[in-house]
Structure formats: structure tokens, C-alpha cells
Amino acid sequence: MSDTAAQSRTAQSPRLTERQDDLYLARRTKTKRETRRRLNLDSATALSVSIISFLTGTLGLYGQGAAAGGPAVMIWTWVALFIPIWCVARAMGEICSAFPTLGGPFFWTAALAKKHGRPASWLVAWLNLTGDFAGTAFAAFSAALFLGRLLAVETGFSDTLVQDLAISLAIMAVAGILNSFAVDFVARINRTSMWVHMGGAVVISFCLIAFAHTHQSAKFVFFHYANNTDWHSPIYVVALGAVVPLLTFTGFDANGHKADETLGASRVAPKAMTRAVEWSFVGGLMLLISLSFGVQNLNAELGTAFPAVPAQIILDALNGPLAVFLLVWILIGQMMCTISCVDAGSRMVVGAARENALIFNGYLHHFTTNTRVPLRAVWAMTLGSAAFCVPGAFGLPWFYGITAYAAIALFLVYVIPTFLRLIHPSRFTPGDLQLKHPKLVGWTAVGSIVLASIAAGLPVARDYMHWTTMNWALPGVLALVVLVLLGYMLFGRGTYEGPQQHITAEELAALEADL
Image 1 (cartoon, rainbow, N blue to C red):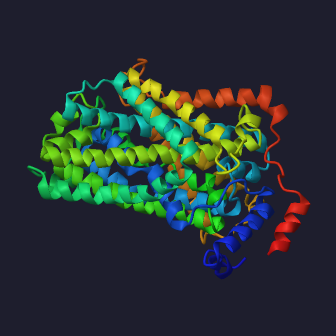
Image 2 (cartoon, rainbow, N blue to C red):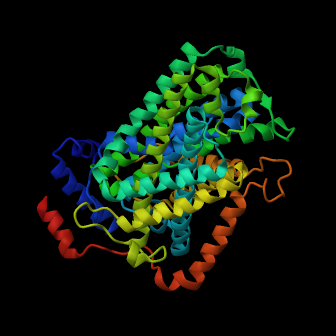
Image 3 (tube, one colour):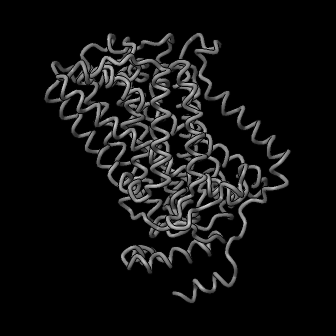
């Protein structure tokens, strides 16, 4: 199909585009759509912006970056890493265009592998599942931290990590209920969330620049290096500070999971991935710069018992009512992120269950009759993410470890199909989106993901061999890989055959005749 023809598809009536999408899906993946196509380019972009959520990642990790390198490291690594992260989205988008189906990366892996495709795709499915659990837990726990601080300011609430856990579990319950019984409302949340995030970046930045009691100098913001860690090597400290952009920019694989629900999916879903990265880059950079200008006393704010350092900066810099208003705005964005994570993650669950890549597959592969919502997958996602919230109550290193685990697991999910596409070009036939320089983009993506995984797994504390200070992310990922491959050898090898054909010749002929 030519680019002109492909581009014209989304300009046609939604009904005609939907039928063309269904035929494209059937020919490319031998599957058929099981959901309703609700997303256009704007709503698909908004979904990924909501899940990347710089209001969650950038703000939740600002304290880590401020301690490991200070404002200059956070800002300049954010800028320097934009192109590599953008390449990851472009490389994944090209593969998504060829296989726009439920399950996303796990399906792509099976399709692109020459050998060992079944164990490789089985592994990717489990990495994606647990990475989504951990990423959603990070969003919920971050929202709980901000809500706890807000309640402490307004009511004298005694904010502890155990209470934050209780709040995060309540947030997860709300996300599960809304995704189960208010699908149209969730769709509106996904669309609105982008403007909550981008508007939040603008409003928070304006307030901090215009109304902060005092401001730091441009030299402090762009060139101040601070090391409040136990490490002495500047290179190592910069690597720790770089996790702010690295751990924030995950989740744009959601457009792959929701491709079945996207009009013009073969072009719109990939384009939404890169647009989401671009919008999030702008919004996150605005927040990093304005927060750094608004710092009143960096050492004191880092030393506060409250872990959400940006909230303390806002409270110190602004008058009470305005600061509370901004904290409420941030909290709303973080809760929207949690809801969107459950939405997209449930599509990954049901897609993998359709191919018997998980456990209880027959039970999880289920859609409601009226709304076509994978209700059981929604609650599997909700309960799994709630379980990943629990370690946060044992200390902030555990909270950071959950965050880093999500990043490393999802980095591996991104890199495996991207790497296979590069080394097995004969296995890949581009879809409606074809990169002009696939090798340059692909190898940039692979290299950056490898380095990002190493950075995310670095110990934060110097006494890292203690169970309360170790960064458990990398050991956790390695343990999962071993357990998942062992599970494949014992159970999956007999039940998992890789992606199967789910459309009959008669159904395919009917689609072709309909056009």
C-alpha cells in the first residue's frame, strides 16, 4: 500500500476505515478484532502521554535526580536522551505498523524470531506483564505520596508509608472499578489526561516562575552539580541522576496493546508513540526547569521526611492556597495515569492469554458482551499492580526498586523485538509505516536501551548489599527470567504454541468481499 493510500484511510468514514483495519489485521496477523475501535490519533497520543506521565515520573523521581547530580544533571540528561528515546519509539512503531494486534511486543517477538520464538515470546509476555504491574504500582504509590502530603498540610494527617500503601490500594481499586464499569468515562479520562498533563506543566511552571518567594539563578538551574549520595565518582553519580528521564519514558508500548481499538492503527498507533514522547519531552523539561528555579533550600528539601520532594518545593516556594491547588492538579494527573495504565495493561493481558502465554488463559481471555471490555484481565491487572505496591511500605529504597524494575522489564520488552527485526530482516515485511533509516534508528534504540537498563539497575546506596538498601530491580528481573524460562520448560512448552490463526478462510473472504 502506498503512503498516499495509507494516509487517506483515516480521512475516510470511520466505518470504512474500521473495515479496512480489520482486513489489514487479518492479513498481517491471522487474527481478528475482539474490541471496539475507539481511538483516533489524538486519543491514542493522549493515552500514551497519560501513561508516560511526566507528572508521575518526573515529579516522583525529582528527589533522586536532585540528590544524584542536581538540577544540571537532570535537565541536560533529559535533553541528551530525547533522541535515543525517540528512536526507541520509532523502531517499535515500525514493528507495530506491521503487526497492529493485541499483545503487542510478545506477538512481534514470536513473528520475528527465526529460532526459539516460543520461549522468547513467552518471556516477553511475562516481562511485559510484571513490568506493567510495577509501573502501575509506581503511579498509584506516587499519587498516594502526594495525597498523603496534601492531607498532612490541610488536616494534620500523620503521613506514613503504611498509610500511603493503604491510599495506593484504594487508588488501584478505583482504577479497577472505573475500567470495569465506566469504559466511556475512562475513554474521556484518557483523552483529557493529556491536557491535564500539558496544562499542568504550563500552569506549574508559570506559578513557580511568577510567584515563588525567591528564585535560584540560571547558573544554579543549568550548571549546578550536587552530590548528596554516598558515591564519589561523578560519572557514576550522573548515571544515577539520568534515571529521571530513563524511568519516566516507559509505557508508550500502550499504543501497541491498544492497536485493536485504534482507527487506522497501522499508521496512527506508531505515530501516537512518537508524538507522546515528543509532548512528554516538552512537558517534563518545563517542569524540571521551573522546579529547579523554584527551589528555596535544596538540602533542606532533600532532607524532608516527605519523599515527594517536588511537593515540598512547591509548598516552600508558593503561598498555601496556590501550592495546594497545584498539588491537587498533580494528584489528578497521577490518578489519571494509574487508570490509563490499568486500561492498556489489561489489553496486554488478554492478548497474551488469547495465545496461552500466561496462566489461567481460558479464564482471562474474555470480553464483556456489550462494552467489549476484558473485565477479568482488568482485575488481573488491578490486583497484580496492587501486590507490587506492597514493598513500598517497607521503605523508599523498595519504592525505587519497584520503579527501576518496571523500567528494566519494559526496556527488555522493547529491545527484544527491535533487536530481532534488525538481525532477521528477511522475517520482517514493513507495514504502512516504513522507516527511511531502519538500521540507524534500530541500533540507536538497542544501544540506548542496554545502557538505560544498566543505569536503572545501579545501586543507589553505597552499602548496597544490605537487604533494605539494595536496588532489587536487576536481581528481580534476573530471577523472573530464570523462573519464567523454567516455567516454560515445565509447563509452557506443552501448552504454548506461539501466536495462532484466529480467523477462518471464510471470515477473511467475507472481509475482502465487504470492501
